[in-house]
Length: 489
Image (cartoon, rainbow, N blue to C red; front, side, top):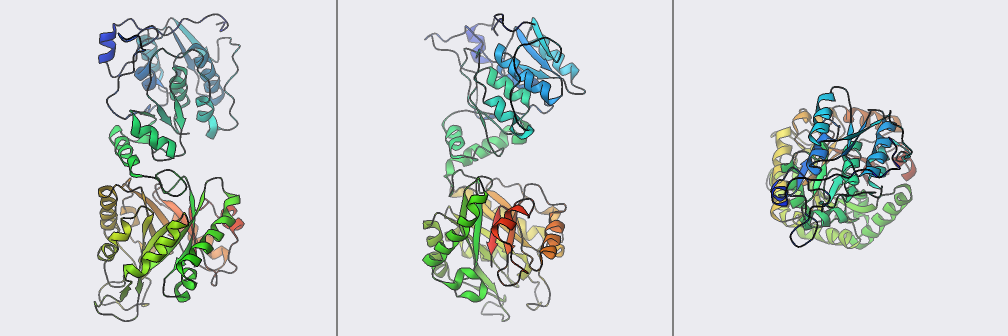
C-alpha cells in the first residue's frame, strides 16, 4: 500500500440519534450534534478497557464504529511500533496478531467493515516506525505522536501505563484521544491525573487497572488531596528518607536527639543527600515510636508504654511544616495493635501521617519481653489495615503508608495471608536487620521471597550497629530493588 495517497477516513453510517445512545461504539468523522459541535463518545462514568489479550481489539471496538482502514501488525516489537506509526498516519485502529488471537482479530476487521487492511510486516510503507529507545518507553513514545487524522469525535481523556498494549495506545492516539502515560496504574499517580479524573469521565487502557469498579474506587479517592511531592499515592511518585526515634531522647533513635524543629531540619539534610541520586522527589520523614515495649508491665499490664499524643504532635507538626511525612510506630508488647492504633486516631486523621507495626515487640500473654523475637499473625495485621483504610476513606484522606517491620521469617508466620488490597493504603515491608553488608543483603533477599508484589520495600541504616553503615550512594545503587523508604536509627 502507498501511504502517500489520501487514505479514506473512518466513517459512521448510523444516525446521530443511534450513535449517541450506544455506549460501546464511537461516532466517526462527519457526525455532529444539532448545534454543529462534534458528537462525543458516549460514557457512563470512569471505565477500564482491559484489552486482556493485547491485540487492541477491545480498544478498537470501544472507539471505532467503523473504519475503512485498519492496520494489523505482527507480534514483534518493531512491527508493533511501525504499525503504530502507520495507524496514526491513517487515523485507523491498530490490531496485533498474537498467538491464538487470529479469530478475534479477523472478527474485528469484519466488524469495522474495513476495505483496506495494511499488514505489518508485509505491505510497503514509507512511514517511519515510532522511535522508542527501550520497551519501557514504547507506550509513552506512541502517546507522544501527534494524531495525523483524528476522528471528528470528542473522546474522553485516556490513561495508560507502560503495561498498556502498544495496540491500545496506538488506536486511542490515532483516533485523537488525549493519552496520558502514568508511572502506576492508579489515577492518583500525579497531581495532573488527579485533576483529570475528578473533572470528567475517563477511560483507562489495560487490565493492569483492574476492573471498572476498582478504577472507579480509585477515581473517587483521587479527590482526597495530595501528599508532599505531589499526587495522592504514597509510592510511587516520591521516595522517603526518615529519622527513627522517640521524643524522649537519643536512647531510641536519632530523631529524639534534638527538638522537633531541629530534628525536621536534620531529616531534610538526610533527604537532600539522596535527591541527586533520584528523579522522583525525596521527602524527609519521621518514624516516631509512639508505643515503646517495656520490661515492666505498666499500669495496664501490657508491657508497652503508650506515649501521650500531645507529646508526639510537635514532631508531626515539625516534619509536616518541613514538607515531610510522619509514620507512627507501634511496639505493643503483650498489647493489641488495633487498640494502640486507636489511641492515635486524631493524629492518623492528618493527611501526612501513616502507621507502622513492629512485630518484633509483639508478645503473647504471659511472655516476657526479650524472651524471644516477637511475631504477629496475618489476622492481627489485617484488622488494623481494615480499620486504617476505613478511617482514611471516612475522613477523605490521601493514601496512607502502612509499614510492617520484619527481619526474620518467623515474625509473620503466615505472611501469605496478609491482604494488601486496600487502595487507601500503601503496603510497605520494612527490612530492618542490622550487621554487615552480607548479613543485611541475606535478610533482604530472604524477606523478598514470596512477597506480595503490591508491597513496597523499605531499608534501615543503623548508625551504630551496621558494619559499616551504607552511604546514600550505596543504599540507592547496591540495594536492589531500590528501597522506597529508608530510615536511620
